[in-house]
Image (cartoon, rainbow, N blue to C red; front, side):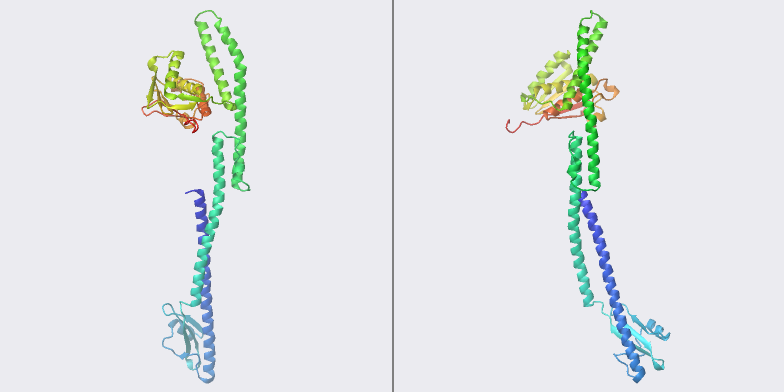
Length: 414
C-alpha cells in the first residue's frame, strides 16, 4: 500500500470515527431531551389531577386511585411523601406519574412511551444520511490532500534517484513545489547534499586531471631515460616500473576525461561476434597470452550493433586483463546477440563491487590480487558513453561474471 492510500485511509478512519461519535452523542442527547419532556408533561398532569381531586374529589386525565398496576419503585417513592415519575422498560414502555392524596390514597396517571417516535426516527435517518454524506466528502478531500502530498514526495524521491545516477544538477526543491513544510525541508536538505557532493566530485576530478597532466611529462622523460640504460636486470626492472607508471598516468587521464563529460562515442555498424573474436586475437598478441587462456564462445547468429568499436575493444581488454590478473584462466568470453559476457575461474568479485559497482583505487579483497581498481572503472566509463549496461556478478559455476549489454539499433538504423 502506497503512502497516498495509507494517508487517505487514516484520514477516512479518523473522520469516520469522529462523525460516528458526534452522531451517537446527538442522538443520545435527543433521546434524553425527549424523556425529560415526557417526564415534565406527566408531572404537570399529575399535579393538576391531584389538585382537582383534593378540591372536588374528581380525578382528571384518566388518573386512577390505588392502581394495582402501579410499579413498585414508584409506589415506594410516593409512600415516602414524594411526587415521582417512573418509566417502565421495553417492550410497551410506559411513563407513570403518581402522588399521595387525601385519605392516604395514591393517585397515578400513565401514558404510553413509544420507542418508535416519528420525530426520533426522522432524526435517526437524518444522522445516518448526513454521516454517510460527510464521510464521503471527507474521503474525497483526504484522497485529494494525500495525493498532493504523495506526488510531492514521489517527485522528491525521483530527484534523489536522478542525483544517485549522477545528475547532480537536479533540484529536489523545484520538484517538491512551493510550500513551507517537512517535504520542502527534506527537498532543501537533499539539494544541499547534492551541492556538497557536486563540489567534492569536481574537486576530485580536478585533482585527478591535474596530477595526471603534471606526471605525464616527467614519466615520459623517465621512460625515455630508462630505455638508454645499459642492458641488465636492474635496467629491466626500471623500464618495467616506468611502463607501469605510464599506464597509471594514462588511466588517470582517461578517467579525468570521463569525469569532465567530454567523451563521445564514434558510432559505426559492428558485427559483434566477429569483432570480439578479432579483438581477443589482438589482445593475445599484445599481451603474449597462451591460445587457451582466453576462449571465445559465439551463441546464435552474429548480430550487428551500432556502437564504437574502439571502446568495445577497450572494455573487453580491461575485463579480460582483470580476470587474468585477479582470477584464474581460462577466461571465457561469450557473445550472444547484443550481449557479451566475460567469466574467469577465480574467487569471484567482492560483494561490495557487485552491489555498488567498481570504484577507483579499490581492487577488492586481498585474495583477488593487487591493483589500482582503475581497469573496471574505465570499462564502466566506456559503457556509460556507449549507453550500454555493464553489470558484475557471480558466474553460475563460480568465478567472476561481467556482462555488457549493448543498446539496440536505432529505428532509423535498423
